[in-house]
Picture 1: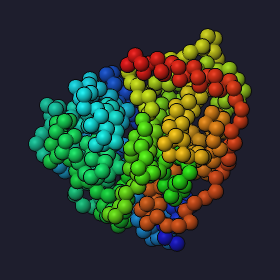
Picture 2 (picture 1 turned 45 degrees about the vertical axis):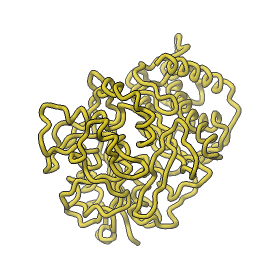
Picture 3 (picture 1 turned 60 degrees about the horizontal axis):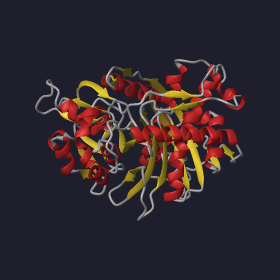
Picture 4 (picture 1 turned 60 degrees about the vertical axis):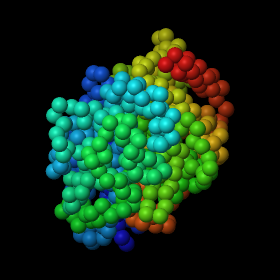
Length: 462
């Protein structure tokens, strides 16, 4: 049976996974990566370290295979954390660090474009935000050490330039869109947005479909046949997403994704791209929660809980955590507010961590509510590392009022990019590992009402 290699370069690690033709993982390796949080909203990663982590993950994964399996690897897909950017020399060498998707150093300058926000959103599908690449790319271009011939690269483009055997500068449409310089309908760079953000087109890579030929993976002979953003790929972790379902993928950030219907609006959510081919475009409505795994990591550095899963069941009256870690995404779009608790007098560490988990559920359900109205979804499918928290899954079902199916798949991104690279074979679907039916939970709903009231006040004052 043919096999396929998936590379998933994420915020916290780089992963390489081998899948067979039915989507079963045969081997894998994970390399952790570090991130630097500096003053002034600056969040950076070392570009060379990210590239080295990918090369190590791929090498260890392939070396672990039996010769017959290694010879059966037919194609490779690359999924990359979105909205992270850097400057590069023409040779492909990084010039300085990667500016993370969490980086907001360009927030002040972006306010000069506030009167064009509606037009920017209409063209790009994205609200004006420092989390996307455009403001950070302008910041890089204006650095004193930026030289003629340097490339302003989405992270995916930098990785491709150094992983593939050819020397082309290319980027897929999903990662290109996340720069906020991309015309969401024309599927290419927008001359209008390039002018407004002061980015020369000559400094950007060429835009390509997600499913396309990207050369061969260096020193392996394996063709790279699909490149995408991490969450865009996660949509296809179990093949095509059902029409009546939304996928919630729980990682450092959490994302709620559903297929966009023709003629429908995404409301206050993102108008995103699922995948592009030469003759087909799949579009998504996408909700974003910046503070998911990143919020739990932030909280875990402050408080300790020996068994968070047990706490989610046993703690019945936690405080309410106003989760602004990394900024509040859709549908609120609030930035620049420090996280805080409501009603946390004498709360235990376990209660505070429970409150953080509940805040993730609250933000997700805000997005699910929009999708129920705009798309008419009737069930939730959850994947990603945080889906292992059964308490979180049950709270999501209780609060949304929708049945929730947890996939037996914490590698949704890797599995999805492998499916695209493999040519979208049938038989990729697996039955859900567990189903959570909605239950009555008045206390949870009361805390959710407090949470929404606090965010409403923050939004009104911002």
